[in-house]
Image (cartoon, rainbow, N blue to C red; front, side, top):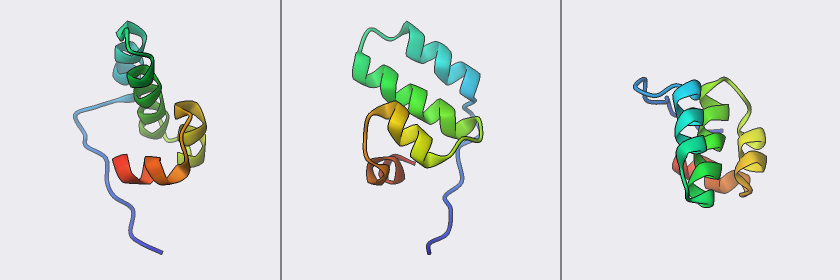
Length: 62
């Protein structure tokens, strides 16, 4: 299995959730909520469910 990729430290879950709520683009909001889940320590499978995408998509954007 591959090595985990580190997350950028200039983001946090709370800030991403605020951006998601303020966005008028539904797809962008889902992606931001998915990222917030990961930044808050959640599992990538949960982020994929929140984002409405497959796990492979989450692996590609993170």
